[in-house]
Length: 229
Image (cartoon, rainbow, N blue to C red; front, side, top):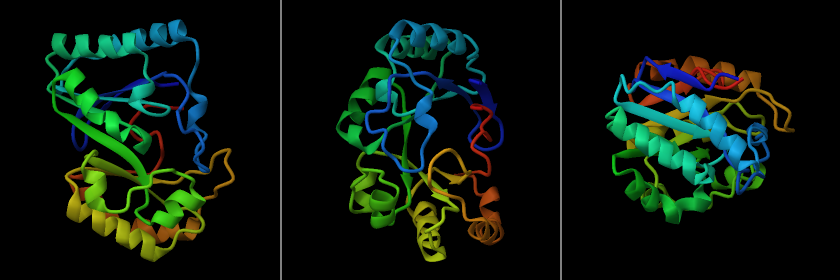
């Protein structure tokens, strides 16, 4: 499992994949990523401290991800991250959270005392597909409501049951309303949700121009940021 890497194309930054406590929601129909967690706080902190030793501050930007939300990272690890931010003179932090923590977002911004780009796994702005089929439990109604809390949506494409119209709308929204977004092309995993190869091929051709959009990061594989397994 690779837990440290550097994103060197767009939005250059160091990135670490840390362990955390189990995902508070943990019921998304497409996700088996939550297997990378633990209830052993000592074990979690020991591993995370080792991973964080790799951070140099060379880009002044750090992204911290885990198998859930940043609010499930133990307090000692959060304090260690804050210590490294000060020591390495890091100026911006990327974090990710589930919608269920929306009312705690400002607390995390206040804790780290530097600008944070807060990501959220939206998957799609189609409310029915997101919350019924994908069981995401992210029940915001409008883009404006989402933007009250979060800065950067993560969108998933290429799932059987998705339509081209859904994806077109999602691409329109992230280009028009957000300064940063991530597109994840779905990869088959141990869940029952399956990849739609024809939809992936269509998306890859129609939206290949997004590769050159500095605001949008496209992950063809879920390890394209250099972390994970």
